[in-house]
Amino acid sequence: MKRIFTLILVLFSLNSLAEEVSGLYSALVPVIDQSTESRQQGVREALNQVLVKLTGNSNVSQSPTVQPFLTNPNAFVAGVGFRNLPRLDLGVEPEPGLQVSFSRREIDQLIRQAQLPVLPSNRPKLLVWIIRDDAIEGRGFINEYTPALTIPSVLETFDQAMKERGMPYILPAFDLEDQLSLSVDEGWSMNASLIAEASERYNADGWIALRFYTTSSGEVRGSWLYEASGLRQLRDFRADYDELYMAIAVKGLVDSIAQHFTYVPQINSNELIVRINGVSSFAAYRAVLAQFKKLELVESLDVYGVEAEQLTLAVDVEGGATLLHSALVRSGRFQSQTEQGALNSGQLQFNWIGK
Image (cartoon, rainbow, N blue to C red; front, side):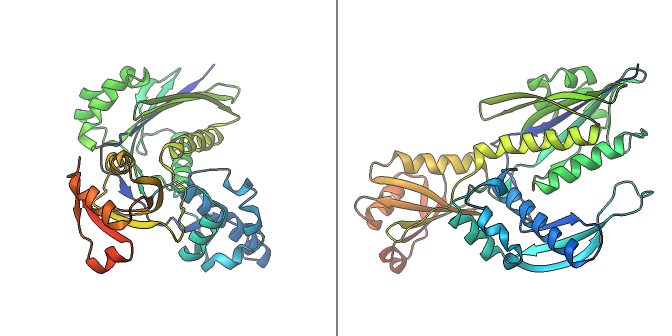
């Protein structure tokens, strides 16, 4: 009986710099042909993928607040065109696809009206390790260069699933330094301290261990372990074949990550707008919010937007903009960039200089 075990380790740390993800408002989806019916179906699927990427929620289209907007997906389209789907295996005939770009303004308005959570575009870059345990060949690290027939489809499915969720990742070099830093058995055992130490050279942002095995009957079983910011989750999965398992595992993985980093954009006319520059990591993001929550004059605090290294907050305070401005400067964590005219209109801006 032949069995194949595969372990994927994804590093994830809130203290490292994240990566600005592009293409969040566009999607490339498979279609049967270039007919009008296929185009319409492709636009609907592309809109769903974009909403999934932006919210981090794979079930976002099932939300009652979203469904009314899905009846006319063309209202959000900025551009559309047919193109082939990319393939890792060059020997396979390419499949037709539809590239759809959506209006950022219209999509953002949809998200606010539907009160959907948003996963910031500044996202963690993931380092992916893969270990294969075969009953005949034994255990070994694998990547796109591994001479095994089953590997291209596994990596291709993982790559596609991560891109559909807007999650950046890289693969290790698998050079001598990697071999000396982390053995196959150490990686397979999900030894968190050893995995983190071996990954330091890549400046990775945290870790996840995902493993699965395929029996001779074709059933796939496995689990992934996720640990970040003091939180740890372990889940088991099973599927009928490798590619389906990989898609299911990535779905559960990103859904779990998104729960910790999403925010719901909210604003009303009575709130002050505060823009903080230099928020270049998730650690800084949390530290900024913690500083605001320490201030007794802050009655409510909502994240209005996250763009590159700028965090925009909607803040309701007692005492007005001048009092909040003074309190933030006195904290020693914020350097004022606010002009007097902006202060009078309730628009504050700072550079984050805290830790």
